[in-house]
Image (cartoon, rainbow, N blue to C red; front, side, top):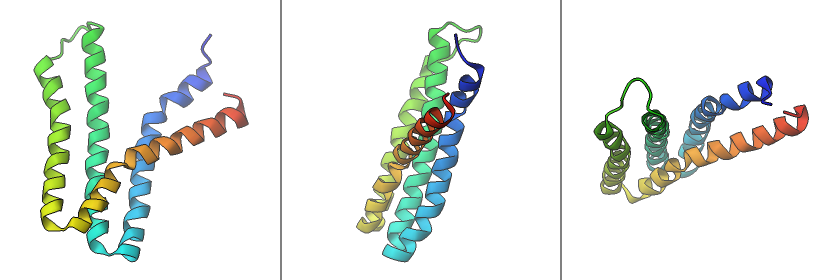
Length: 137
């Protein structure tokens, strides 16, 4: 038997991850600027933006693929799904190329920014563990 309280809590995980990504980028970018300079901070900001859009595009691709697999009433184009999936990697490659040609220091920031979803997911996992232990969900 599924608990409606836990279902509603866990169904909000993607939204919480998005908010944490924005918060982490908003906190880390100025801190990096003050500590390491504008080039690294600009690279991190670009990486964070790419990672944020990449996260949401991946969510859309997975949802559309799941709809296609479950044979929903509205058929999805396989070409559209594949193009969106590949567009994520093209965007990352273009961003890395532009940053690399401008400044190699910015490339380190870009790569750090691309790991923003990982940090947000770790924060979400810690929050879910806390809630599970504290509230018994």
